Length: 275
Image (cartoon, rainbow, N blue to C red; front, side):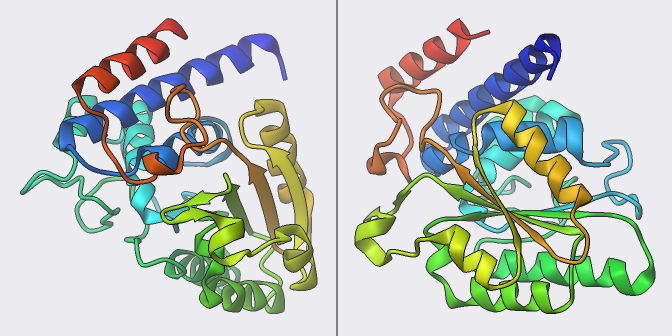
C-alpha cells in the first residue's frame, strides 16, 4: 500500500475514533472499547472496499454491511458520519430520546444501516441471508459482517457458519474482532471460544488471520476474500480493545462505560495529537 493512502486511512480512522468518544461521552453511556477496536476495519470497508453511495443509501447494487455486535454502534455511526451518510453533529445525539442514533443500529431510521442488530448471534445470520439472496437473484453485491469474540460463544454463530459453508457463500466475509475481552472478563475465562481459525476451517471457511490495526494486512485479507471462490471467508482480526485511547486499551472496564469529563478531555487530546 502506498504511504499516502495509508496515511489517509489512518487519519480517517483517527477521526472515527474521535467521533466514537464524542458520541459516547455525550450520551453518558455506551460501548467505547469494542467500538475503538474496529475503527480501522470500518475505515477500510467504507472508504476502500465496499461499493456504497451516501447519496443513495438504499441503492440496490450496494454492498451490504451488518454489525453483528450491535452494541458497538458508535463505531458504525462515526463511520457513516465520516462517509457522508449522516451529519457529524448528530453523533452527539447518541442514545438521546427521539434520536435516530440509538444504542443499537436501526435500519428503519438510520441512513446507511442495512440491518438492525444487537441480539448477539443474529447479525451474522442476517448477513448469510443477504448473501444467499444475492446468489439466488444473480446480484453481484458482497456482504460483510463484523462479529465479536464474545459473541462467538453464541451457538447461532456456528449455525450460521454451517449455513454459509453449505450454500458456498463466497460473497460473504465474516470479520471476527478478536480483542480478547467481553463484558464480564476475558473470553478465555468466561467461555473460551478459541481456536476460532480451526473452528471456521472445520466449518468450511477460507480463513485469514490479521492484525486489525494494520491497513496493509486488512487490504490483503479482503483482496484474498474477493478472489476466493466456492466458500465464505472468515477474517480473524486480532485487535486491541480501546485502541487509540491509552487508558482504555486492553481494559475490560471500558467495554460498556462512558468517560467522565476529565477522561474525555484526555482521550480527545490523545486522538487530536495523532491528526
